[in-house]
Image (tube, rainbow, N blue to C red; front, side):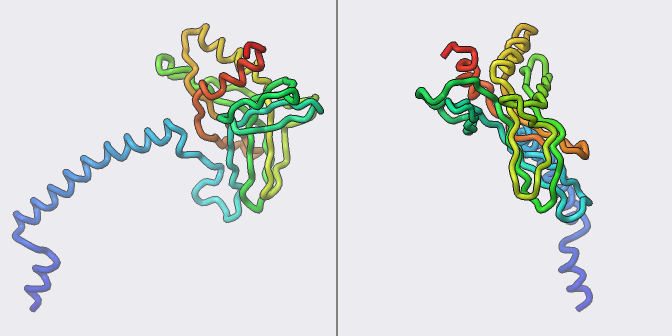
Length: 215
């Protein structure tokens, strides 16, 4: 009886068990490079977004989500914000200036200070550089946009002139780079940086061209 139990727990001869262990190790070694490649691909496409909440953080710590958006000035001076991939609205109600916007939402019950916001611009594979762009502390109409006290379950947006971002693209090109993609980020008062998803630079060019008056 004891021998049967031992055989069920350790099937086969020692040689057979060694072969099973070898096959398991071989399968593991083949899986790890594929897993790392998959994680790198997800990160490169912006499908994995970092959060300021780290392992061991207390329950209820701020959870901030960040998005890229487009801002359009209306005739009454207010700014309408739309997803960056949306078609640019037409009509006499849109007067400019045009803005690149960073949206942040606090999805927790704990308030958090947003101390800074900006963009990272991927300058292309040749350089491998991520060029930072820092949003100004004052937004449309001279209103203060940073720093900002982001309450629980509330939202925030910061704006940068789209023409200035376009000049940033041009400087990258003049230096031999090729702007490929851009992603938004915010920094909390605690120093944590939270990044949004990557967006293709091509998806922002319609807005940039409108800001330069070339569209």
